[in-house]
Length: 216
Ligand code: G3P
Image (cartoon, rainbow, N blue to C red; front, side, top):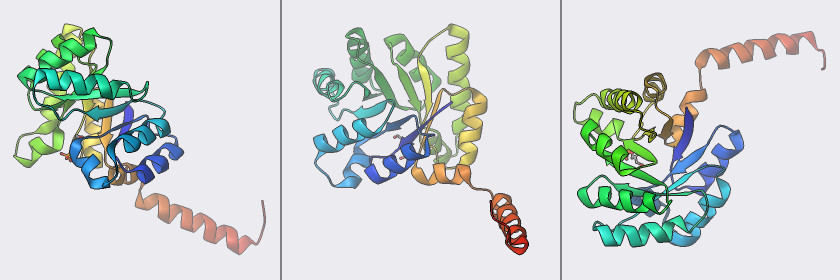
């Protein structure tokens, strides 16, 4: 499973990429707005730092507007992936843009039927939002499992990008379900690395070594 950072913060992205475990980045209008930086230089910088795909979201809601913005965003860099919402016009835009060879991440997916239509339209990625379903007492992970099964059984090549991840268990369960990608905030990536027994064990090793008084 690939690991993407769900952020538009250049500092976080640089740190994640330097770790060597970040394969890509997803952004959305809320994440971009948080950075309070001019849009175009920001997305160009992000695309230049990241080795893999960077999702850049349209803000138009009509078909023509999404296509126009999508074509512009796709020009930003070769690793740019256009993000379109899962609406009627969004589906039409996915069909059109993928027909032009532009890769699309279809976002704001909350049901298996939406995911089925998105795959039929030719989406490169589908983004089911786990955490936001959990927030309203629906089991978000069931959606990931359903979509993975449907795509596998039906032979769709659209990649399942588990989004709205809030904690390490979401990452573990998405990996078990067969999601191709999990996108997460930097804080969750940090949580994935941490274990108290690692810290305790390392301290004991170093204390014992210090008592010995040797050098490597
Ligand atoms: O980028 C889309 C998604 O990951 C947003 O997550 O935490 O705002 O629901 P969240």
